[in-house]
Length: 114
Image (tube, rainbow, N blue to C red; front, side, top):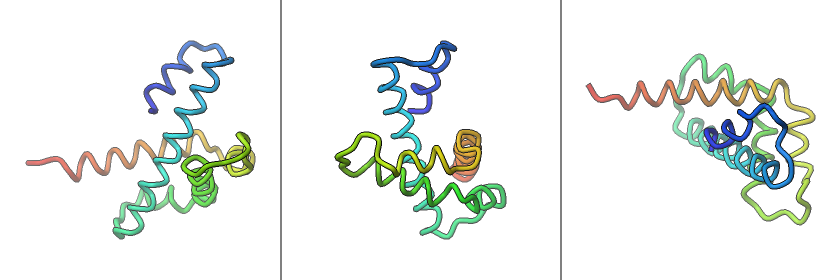
């Protein structure tokens, strides 16, 4: 999803119409899926200094609300759970990308077979 989202944004033009809806769908699926990984990380009691520092962010509970807004039916398209992450989050885009990259680093290194 992140790749598709990045491809839509790579044009340098703000998405409009169907492209805007598509970009929002990609972003929502990516962000919500990232929270599912956070849940597993915590449930499995995995530790990594860089990832744990990112998970100390006040963005985590907002991302949880965003996940619920994405994966559960909402009557209103612009549900407040989507807006709270965007409005109240701290450097959300950079934080999501950093967390995504660090999780990728961790799991690729952990699953690498010698």
